[in-house]
Length: 377
Image 1 (tube, rainbow, N blue to C red):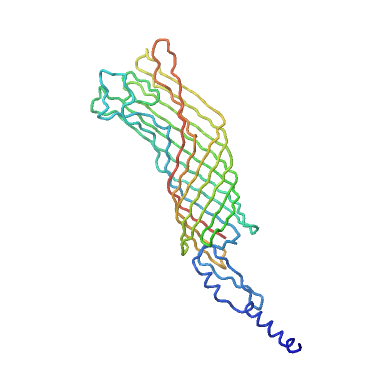
Image 2 (cartoon, rainbow, N blue to C red; image 1 turned 180 degrees about the vertical axis):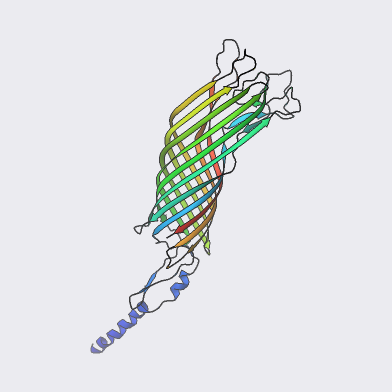
């Protein structure tokens, strides 16, 4: 028993040697381009810590702040922005059927490619690694269109307005001007999960809200009278948003990511429609005027989808933990948002005093490219 007792300090020192000795194998793992590899602390015998550097992705136990800015280059399309039918050489009106309508190609108002920005700030806590994220998106665009009647047979071919146009001889020109503005803010709570060392999932839920508006103007030109239609609407409100982000790290900092979110926004919708005509030369044909206003509560579902590539570089012993660059294609759908009120054709008969209004209801689509630069610290 005495001999065993004497050898006990020696046995304990042998068992403690791996804990106090230098381990080089961990550094080989830490420098690999593996997504979110843990930065494991190793303690030397003097009590100091040695954190192995990460070459690319942040560790999954990272906590701190993040700021990002995105440049948006988007195109906008709307289903209810059609305003004229342009005939072609094969759609010359037969003189035997002078009341024939709807022959030709339907033309809609178009938007130019517009620029926008999205900025955000988040903080990840060390308790379960929840992230509080606030972000704001701003985007504007406008566009113009103009069409004239064909010159193949000007006596038989005229433009066909989709709304009322006062003219005694027919519509010979049509032009549109549009302006669209989009502002959305989100405040989300996010939680990340790591199914594997190379795949990260980030779930988010929270509040959203914003203000969206559009000015849609159309002018129909006749030989003696021009008709102007102004349709302006605005929507503002708040709601809830939920989504999921996924990221697959391929290697050397490069990865593929996808983003999907769905939101419902409840708010106030206002639409003002006005139709005016220039004073006609013939005083027996008074100008047609219409002015309507609609206001009510609207529930707008909206969907966001993005898919792209990113690159990340992490640092140790620096104020900045990582820098990130990403490029993606993004698609946004604002359902049942655009409402265009239009007047029917001119009333017929001496007893007719006015023509009814009808409403075109459609979605607004925004799609294009997104370039992001972010910093973790």
